Structure formats: C-alpha cells, structure tokens
Image (tube, rainbow, N blue to C red; front, side, top):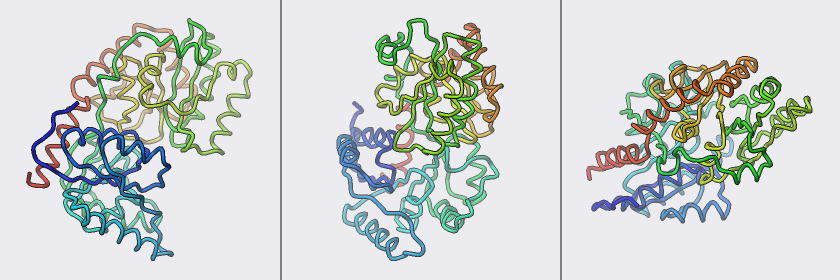
Length: 386
C-alpha cells in the first residue's frame, strides 16, 4: 500500500478499460489519495467495469468510434466527455494511447491534458500518421494540444518533436518488482500443460497478430524442436484481440510438422497475476514485433531472470535492450536466425545466465513501478500547481 498524499486531486483517464496497466495506474493513484476516474475508448463488459471499480476508481462510461461521415455521433460523444469533465470537477485529463481516445481528449480542449505514447503508437524517428484522414489530421493535433507527453523509449522524442514542441518526459508503466522477480520453476504449470519435468520452454507472450511476427516463431519452432528435442513452445495471447485469419495461418505452420505440433501449445489468456510464474517456467522468452516500444512484457521477463530474444529494430531503450549484453536480437522476419538464437540460449547456459543477470540488474535499478509512479505523480502536481 502506498502512503496517501495530503492534497486531493481528481484525475480522469481516457484509456482502454480492459488494459491491465491502466488498471494498475488507477489503483496506484487511488491508494495515493487521488480521486480516479476512467472513460474507456472501447466498450466494456461487466467484468471489466468491476475490475475498474475494484481499483478504487469510478467508471464514467465509454466513447464510441470516431466518425467523420456520421459526425453527429462523434459530436455526441465529445459533448458527453466535456460535460462529465465539468460535472466531476476533474483537475487533470490523462489519455493512454495516441488514437481515437486522444482525439476526443484533445478536442475537449480540457487542460491540463497529459498524453502517454505507447509502443505501437509511434515507432522510429521517421514516423508519420497513417493515410486515414483522421490520423493524418487529429494525431498531430492531439500531440500539439497536450500539456505533457510521456513516452518510452527516448527515441520517440525525436518523432514527437517533428509534430509538436510539447514538453516530453520519459515515463513508462514500470515493473512491479515485488511480483516479477526470480523464483523456483512452478511445478503446477508443468502439470497443467502436461510438460515433462525436463522440458525446455520457449514462451511467446505477445498478441496473435501480424505485427508480432508469431508466424516467424512458429516456423522457427520446427528447427528448434529438431535441434533440442526436449523443447516445448507456449503461445500466450489475448483471445479478445486475436486476428483469426492470422491465427489460422500460424496454426497451419505448426501443424505442417507432426513432431513440432506435439510440442506447441496455444494457451490463450494468462491472468496478469500468473505471468511471473510463466516467466519463471520459461527458459527463453521471445518477443519479435516489427516495431515496438520497450515492451513491459520484456522488462517483466528480465525481472524474473529469464533470457529474452527480441527484434533487431531501433525502437528500444538501449539501456535495457542491449544486444549481446542483456538480450539476443534477430531479424523478426528470419525464422532461421531466430531458431539459431533460441538454440544458442537453450544449449549455452553460461550465455543465458550472463544475459539474464545483466538484464535483471538494469531493470531492478531503474525500471521499477514505484520509481515510475512517483515520477508521474510529481508531474501531475507540477501541471496542476499542487
């Protein structure tokens, strides 16, 4: 439990109400004495609303899709947002993701307005909005109208500054180091997934979508299984966020080789509180998106002392993701290169230990959630003059 602050502050998040990290921040700041509210930019099921309210925050409703042709719907939702911000006497508006939620937040003309850029929003210094007229016009508008932009890693600053001179701070969700830490291999998970005691486990924790190159992992699995017969692959993914056509393509790749298919399981959703045990179960975690920010799942893996294979892309924070020092990096489209990296980590325990130890040291030193939350709270107070 965090100590409560003296001053009362009313903060409204515009975020995906199903997103575990939004829930974590709602809880953190509720426990620090803030009055927290959430407007979701996706529809919410009753269990999602219950999860929001369990953090101590109030759920205020959700915004619909951002329409141009059916502009009256957009106008209705914008009016809804403006009215509730005034009715609840909100002190600060904080939007997670650069998308429709940020467009609504910027158009509300509410200040102070904080915008958090996450990994899939902006990638690389040459990023520019998509061809959709809404993205082309409204994403730069949201960037210009924010009083503060937070992002991670540092490289995103250059891209943002091409569109806005807004203040930018390096803040991310942070790793809960109390939960994500080294520990014994959980035997219950070996039993749950019917894995032998000597199983070598490769875990993929990213969404089952083309961006994350899961088909590259599936193709590499055949080579890895041939080289390391005791290896098993577990694909974790959010069922609500699956690209079904892509899932079918990945499953076809796995099914093409009977030996490999016996060693691959698609395990679906993992409750967030169980993720530490899955990282402890894994001998290697693989995360190879085509573009990304410094993914919290990668930092959490590192905190659990599990070696990681990542994409060779320029989007990461080099302090945490340093090829050859804390991770191995590969071409996310090259299954042969990925297979070689996985086999190297599975066969070379000295390399795996050296990489994971250095990665864990760096995460524990500066990526913990308490440090990140404290920094964000300080910024909130600066913006509100409290």
